[in-house]
Length: 404
Image (tube, rainbow, N blue to C red; front, side, top):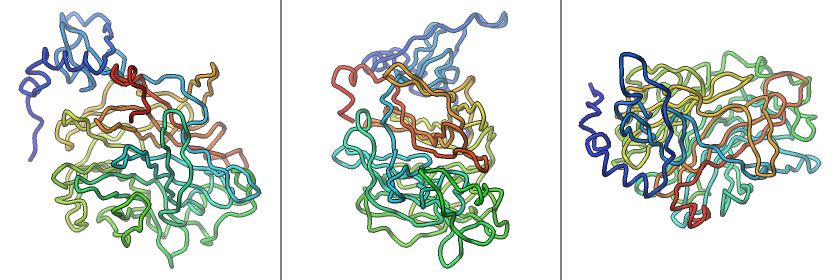
């Protein structure tokens, strides 16, 4: 029954002067919109037109530093060190270990903890259904140093983790899984072997080898520390479906949950009470792999990826977490620029996650990234978890982003 309130009564719209001063304090990007249509004399009318990533003043969207574009819907990504993210070296001949997307939370000291899908046996993304597990990695400063492996959170098969901190301090991780003694969800139930340097053996095929009789539910675990020990996995109702649910929740300060999965909006009275999770409505899902996050002004945001070839991102916003509006334009594209002057256009740039600092500012984008392919049998399917920084707010430009 929840309705979107009139944006003219929201504090951001009601007191644009106060907000503008705040935005100027943290750093803004002012972007001139194209000329409005003949029916309007203004290019924007409210924060709705600025994707709630900025404020509308005199018909112009003034974007917070992390966003740019006429509607503040394009991440203001900056050239970043190539080494950032998660690029593990495995035990299989000392070669590369593939990974796929990283969800990042901060501990009380500000140290960053990533929870990512990692592909075992030196294989690549083609065989994620038979070889994926969930791992924990850390970085003291994600803006200058890569994440390094700490431990496994869940063994094969486990995939697409999303991590959150509860207001009471717990570390909560949701992930898609098939738990033992059930075998991995591929025909024959065997892991792929004979892989080399993060590239799958061609004989293992791709996820077309899926065992259609096995569903892919989402489970939840939690711990008082970022490295466990973890609770017994609890299945989230409504997620035991053929396709992985892509479940992406946020925990509100009162412990309640708002989240998205493929086409469905999910709520829960309390994150720890699995029986309170329920599918409450549908949303206009244009892509895949939603990632929901909340900013300090109480606005819910979501970012998805669209397509495999020429991947691009799409931003959504919501005032209540239930009704979602897609922003115009692309949030990101398939090219990553590096601070050595080079760039790479990826074969896949999926599984987007937003990293926020302790104040809720957006500071980076992570993705499951593959230079060549992530879905072609016999192809070079090595994948890694990329991290690209966004333009820092003024306060962080002055102080250094290592304060996150």
